[in-house]
Length: 320
Ligand code: TXA
Ligand code: MG
Image (tube, rainbow, N blue to C red; front, side, top):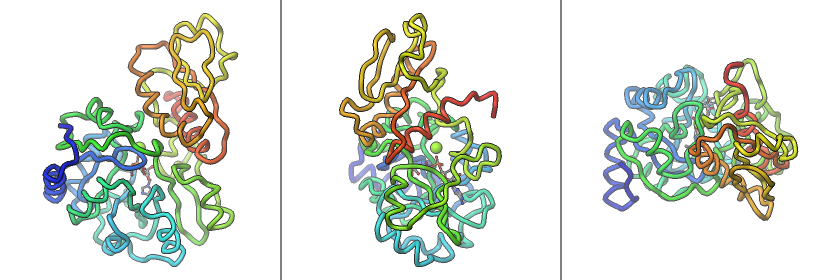
């Protein structure tokens, strides 16, 4: 059931989380499917409902840096500096895990991914629940991420105990994931651009493109995909006959000849483009098109996260 985030509904949602239920909630990146991170049975329901393999660890969401106590075993100085700068916000840090976190959350890894979301509904929900909340994106495994409550309703619907509607997600792409080992390693491009992290950290090693041994399933070659086949292509690369039966996901200009066109940002703003990416793909995917073609965007700032998602969506699933 989709409900507005009134005081009463937040209380109900917080109670559901405490008692082992599943609540979908808005974050500034995408909608999350939350469960009490310290209860293995509750977390197990996330995997069940998403159809997510249990080798895929989850991100734990906290409402304050203090709430990390009980989730991580230690907070290195570099992590504290990053939290001070980027939390609340779309940066996920991978840190040594505390004993209390069930192995199911971390897929047996000695580390745990944590973030403090900036969305006020998410923060209030976690604060009221009083427990850290494990939450992957609220979509069936491998499918497009949800940036609106209705996306969650359409794909997971009644299998979730409650869906809090907080309007459209501000960033529209997932958090950036950073592993803090001896040196910082970027595991997933996301809403905090690499350039911004490097201003703080200096050069950051990238481990996002591993094809064969993914560290995180966001790294699986085929992921974030619509049901309609999707390919990266400039408009002129698509034969006119094919255009008539296909949709085009354009960056800024409307090309000719396609059955339907969605423009990510008429002004060419990568932030705006990221915010519209999944929503536009959800819309195109519902039109019964033969194919969706997507225009490559510049690979800088949020364009890195956009291109990462588009490339993975465009991978042939039979090759995975
Ligand atoms: O923006 C986001 O991060 C959203 C919202 C809901 O917060 N969540 C999200 O979760 O994108 P999900 O499950 O779709 O992606 C989580 C990624 C996965 O690819 C997972 O493997 C990785 O985080 N991850 C979790 N724990 C990890 C760990 N200990 N080491 C490395 N990667 C980890
Ligand atoms: Mg996801």
